[in-house]
Amino acid sequence: MTDDAVNELAGLEERARARSRPAGEEGLVVCDNLVRVYRTDGVEVQALQGLDLVVAEGECLALVGASGSGKSTLLSILSGLDLPTAGRARVAGHDLLAMGRRERLAYRRRTVGFVWQQTARNLLPYLTALENVALPMRYARVPRRARRERAAELLGVLGIAHCRDRRPGELSGGEQQRVAVAVATANSPRVLLADEPTGELDTAGGEEVFAALRRANEELGATVLVVTHDPLVSGQVRRTVRMRDGRTSTETLRGEGGGGEEFTVLDRAGRLQLPGDFVERYGLRGRVRLTAETDHVGIWPGTLPRTSARPPTPPPSPGSP
Image 1 (tube, rainbow, N blue to C red):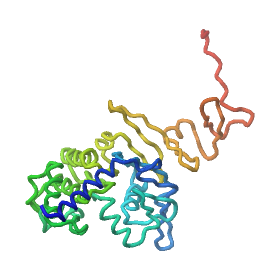
Image 2 (image 1 turned 180 degrees about the horizontal axis):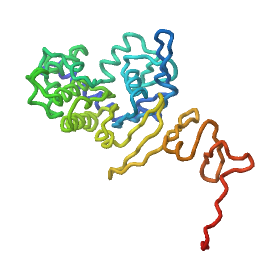
Image 3 (image 1 turned 180 degrees about the vertical axis):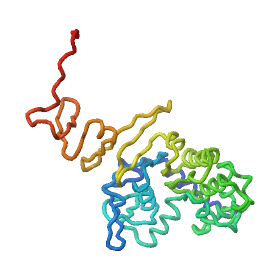
Image 4 (image 1 turned 120 degrees about the horizontal axis):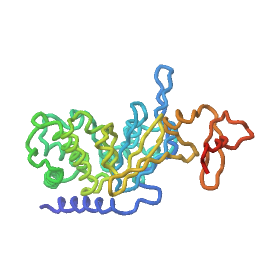
């Protein structure tokens, strides 16, 4: 192996070691009061409405929510493909609002990797799997021999070494998406973003792709954020963030045993989104009343009399002590 190849591989290893170092108290990915407004033909659409999100280095996190909740907009901003209207967004020390054109290009080449839902957007049809994976390293000026060795290694790690000499048209959908994960991790990114990567696949293919994403997280050291509607995917990560109306609304945290507990998210402005079934069950509309209790905050319908801090206690049933 040439000296240039050795030096480049050493650089890749150093970046891999850097991923295991603390990224600061705030987190590797930090969104603070993030706003994105689109204006078309005089109409404003608020895709993100003051979103807060912190992702620690090494996490594998699922983003879920209804269509139009802002998930894909958030990934476009974190990938450097779009700019927020207001707020703060930092990824691995990069201020996404302040980056110039050259810094943004370098950011997309080295700091983040991206996997699209549509397999045709991820791979060039006239290149083999090995050549597709090696291509991002060519743009990063990695020597040719090191590119091929790194590409072959990634295909092996992700369980698709047998695909190295096949073109995308000769691969199944699941194989294409696993090659896409290899492409996205070719330059050892700190963050791997995936937008519905299993959306066009059957259950078996989707499981294989998510297994590749887990390997990228656990063995290659990338912090993974995956947008998904697939409950099988969101149920296999430690942390699932649900978005609604352009903000994070709830988070589900899972322990080693797989059981999860759902939390409502209180953002930095003190706002929270109550689950819809709670709103319906307790008739919460418009104004609501808050009461400060010893160890919690009470939320009551605003129609209660002002003299009552809480609904009256019903009388005991007959025969009760």
